[in-house]
Length: 612
Image (cartoon, helix red, strand yellow):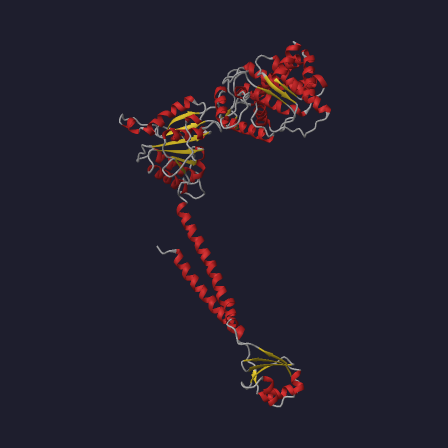
């Protein structure tokens, strides 16, 4: 194949030659002007006497005469005599000669001819040479990048000459069952012959499924660290390009590199970006993502067996994955990594705090109790925020209060002490939050109150922090009803005390309505019976709903609305009765809040007990 750069070089030299010739011609025409006429020295003497001569320049016996009218002439003088003597010898009037400016020039310098050559020939040549050399270099680099374009952008850890930060199971807190599942993988990578001799086949693929931040990537790195084998890490999105065929080429490149490092681990993060269920071939069957997925399926379980390559993948969207990926022979195992419980949260906090100066009175168990629903990443962020807070105060250690304040900062945002509320707004906010807290303390099924504050944080004017007594997976109907009552209590306490309501309860109402609607449509906790209404398209790990297909009639929709309204109305009536019957206690809590702005659990419990 003819090189594209050969023609470029030929054109380059041709262009430089043309510009060199043009430069020489330009120099020639620039320097060659109409030759001045030559006159005799006698004629010069006569012209001086006539007062026509303005200036005479002498250079090596050559005279350049400039006349008063601007014309120029040339002449020669005798080399033996000086110019003035020669002119006097030829009859020049001495007085007239004094009026003429005589200039004596030295011998011609090399720069007189070299400077035009440099400016009009050599300099253009150099500039064009540099310009085309830069273009040629960029074209060469682009060609090299073209050949690298189809290589997988995977990062290799653990191979010889590739240092890595070694992570083991000790660096992963909790997840005991998940670690036990992966121990077989680790043992196989360490001692593959033990299994191969028995004819056992280790799972080729392990899919890690769970919410964001629960440690899926960290667990994969721990498997590589425990087994001490090369670890290829690549994001699923890096396979997808706008050019058809690039993704499949990168998959081939990744597995070709992995075969050279066997036994090894290949980790694909965010598998759902290339593993989504294939649909109708609307684009003619040439869609890039589908070709990439097809190549991945072939590499994992095709004609060529990769006995010592194990593929780990992570996703929080298992519902969208193609069934061909999840069949035996590809991703044989699916390990679900849930949010940590209270014991695991305490262990995770210990890991993130081990290199930080903690006060001796720090109680990580209390921090774990206040953080239900936090992932490992959330807890790491919490500890980091506490360290930043302690550093800002120039403290030498991180105290318990720093950690507790960081919980509220992560949940709600930073304090807005600069936001000055009027006395009226402060009083309304105090009664609003006191209502939430009071009802939560009066209903046994409600979560206990940990803290009440009327200091603005983020978008909230005040907040009531409630933490469940223990981590639970299941929720009862009474617990849902209690949660609705606590949410409605803020708005109702405003109405009981001031006879009016504000916009501060908008978020509470939205949450209460959502709970009531789910009780009717999803959980079958209404008089309509144990029926699920609507086919919801949602993700359990992202906790997000993408839409709903309506599979019920308009008459049933009307009944659903009535049931939701009934749940809310009953909760509202019962909550209002409780607030009215405990109005004195409500006022006491609100007045204390106005004075102190913040009430911790101990202070709040003392208020409740004293009034009881």
